[in-house]
Image (cartoon, rainbow, N blue to C red):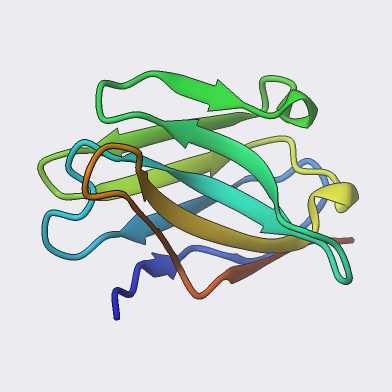
Length: 118
């Protein structure tokens, strides 16, 4: 069983910032996309942002330039810098690693709660 280790969630006021951090064990992030989903209660997970091993990034429309994703291939880590947070960003955020080439796999972190509230 592969475990991605997440940290950085918490409570922040509207307009504030948080950085989420995720570390992948061993070399599972090699040639794989890393990123973050989020999930609201009773709903399916939705993509927030992703970054390929080559550095190509992708963001959901709701990010609107507020978040920045980055990765360190040498350390097998990915970060999500979130600025100008809104109450509607409140959710559980999940890190993932998805390798599309053989051997294919997708692994998830345990989730970290982000709460934006005054």
